[in-house]
Image (tube, rainbow, N blue to C red; front, side, top):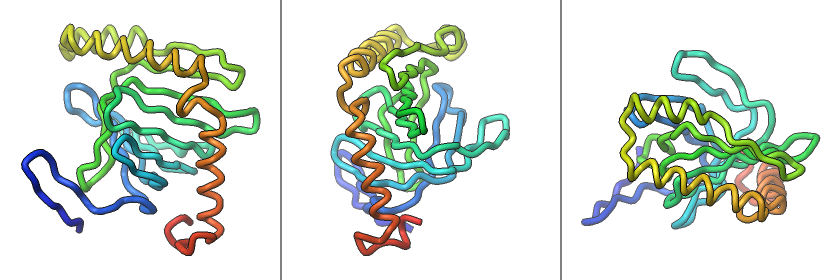
Length: 197
């Protein structure tokens, strides 16, 4: 159970920092796209959630299931139309960015709408835009408005600029800081070791 405090503009749920919670990605038509069985919430602010996944079970919309292969810090803004997964591999940090609606938590799961376009950024700074044809197809099939199309394409430009400048979650210190924080928590330095195992 969770406590809900209602006011005129919004509702606030319990503090989720230090808890493992579900993550749900949807498509524009409201259908589930992908579910993560758990994400450990490392931080929540007015602007974002920071979550870590490590060997997490993922279920696709067609029922296919797989586990994430490496630890990943997930930056999930509350007011921006993207989120960024920072995947920690032996060869460096790889970034997988989803053009997506702002993330919200409704007491059940962290939720966002996936808008197809993705930006993959490699450790050397090179990047690739993915799934442009899928975006065009879904825009037609699901009726993305002209206004939404402009927002999403502008956010892709913003994301590319951020990646090129190594700003925000693309700064390698961001990933190092949060992964180190997670490791300290796992080792019980903060007195909540049961949460972080």
